[in-house]
Amino acid sequence: MSIKAHAGRTNPRTAAGRKGRAGRAAGFPTVLEEALASVPESEREGFVLGVLGDDGDGLDPALWGPGPSSAERKRAALANLRRQYQARRTVVEASLTRPEAAELLEVSEQAVLDRLKAGDLVGLKKGREWRLPSWQFHADSELGFVPGLARVTAVFAGGAVSLTEWAQTPNRDLDDATPAEALTAGHVDDVVRVARVGTAAAW
Image 1: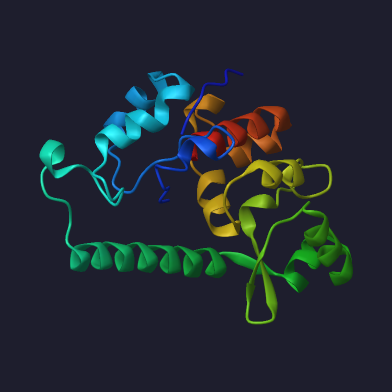
Image 2: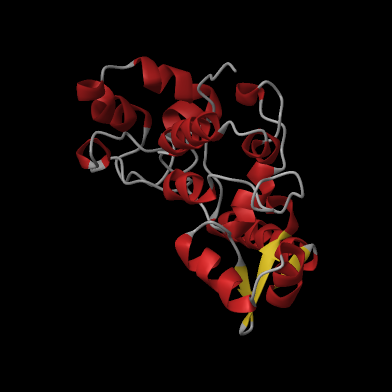
């Protein structure tokens, strides 16, 4: 199975000091990512500062034109939050309760909780109750759920909602299988590698 690289707001003045990770500045265009990657690590901070204005709060207007107003930034942030909360509601609605998961796996509810604590299953809370996204359960898997989740979540940069979206999306680095499908097929190392590369690219 072939594995290829795939893919906050970071203060550019401290980017080089964050374990060598250059970090994306606010509003940094996607088109510049390749250019940034081609710059030697020791010179990346200077490259970023050359693109940004002195306040480091946006792109240099002399190069890129005026940036968004504070009202526009607020609207964009609110729209993004709404999308995230809608995604959470969607995941919750398609998830199993702890009793439902216990019934499927023919184990106790405490055993399901133990699996959650160990990272073998992932879930999110609705009030005091756990909800377990359904994609991780698979009748063909030896234990009734996909293997390797603890290893994936250890390197994945996100919680249960973003993991659910990622796990169900075909990935070209997994030969167009979804990460969930690849895990079910036993390709745990490949999925972990793709998750790790994606996390590194996010920085």
